[in-house]
Length: 552
Image 1 (cartoon, helix red, strand yellow):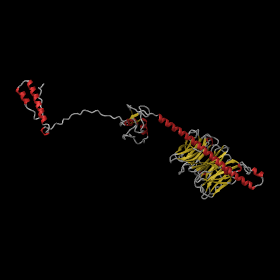
Image 2: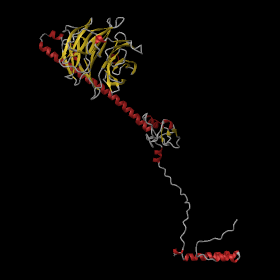
Image 3: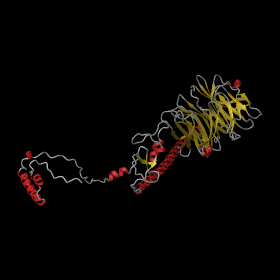
Image 4: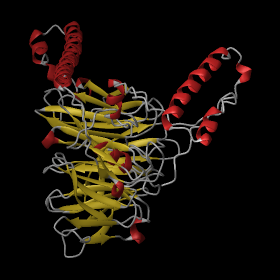
């Protein structure tokens, strides 16, 4: 070990006696005494000259580690709560459950359910990005994290508020149902009052025209009014404010409802169920990709539709689903159920052919009927199966009426002999109870509705109702019959013919005694249908965006 070096100082005033002492070889005790004396002397000199800082050498700046001061960590409850919150929903996460804390490969933390929804909402052709840093993420990057601290939330108050909300919503729904029933009762009472007022006016007229009380009493019942006069508007239902979203409809007596077509967009075409009890829109089911051209309901609760997408669909109104679909190969314009066999159906196509299907055969059609040499190759707009011994299908295209006879071994086509007089049919309806036909025809200047029956492929005309206005739209007309209760008529059945008037924007009604009534609706009527429920006649008129329901 090297010898210890003597203590030195940077002070130039330090006396040199220490060095001389060591070099003179004095005793150690004397050296220590002299050193103490020298230090004292030096201290005195230093204290005497302390006032003059220029006498000292500048002190050296020594770099030394500062003693680490204890950090003051402020516990911020708000920051803790923010750390425990999901940055997507701002709700507290947990260590377990659907909203447990997870991290992505970029390191950011989220609730499991929130980040899964975030990734699922991304487009298929675009990769999902982290909500915090926009780094690419996927469900494979989700990693569970176990946090050291999870703030629990007391959900008692929230559950109570949610329960109160559900209670209020249920109460509001009950009030709406009650209000709807009251409104319906009000409309029924109003219609009944109008009917009674009409009866009073009729009785006053009868009393003023006769003096025979017995004859008057025989004509007093309200049933002496014509059916077209008894019809009163029950309800008006609006579907859309601007666009024509509805075109065709059908009654379903088994479910007391109307099934109407509805176009939501260019690629979504649906049917909507409308209750006859409260006239509320029940449900809408999208079943076609292009416009629906015809709707027919069966007694078993099935709805047959055909459309421009070349499909014929059978939909269950009970289960709200398509149970069978057939490919027509071209646009379908009309359809009909078989009146004798509930398993068979018919579709009239744009190429002037008829396809017959059997629901027990799910792959293909049973017959594809066409005879263009007789039918003149025009689109079929109306098709009706006529049961009974004839077992035929009545068809009407834009040029003529004809039938397909199915009674024999092979179906054959027969053109109906009818005096068209430069008129062309645009709608045909059939009344099963009276076995009569209404053919609506149009020319370049006028419209006529011919009511009659078929006999050996001859159309026997009973009545003709004319309108000097040309019909432009391919709308549907309708006719029906009802037993006549009045004793003043020569016939026991009253026939009612219904058609739209494009010039007057009204519903025109005629009866077989040439009574006439016009009901203004303000729009072109596209379809008319009727049914009888509990011995009451319901008549519905459909425009592009509204439905008018009458009862008599």
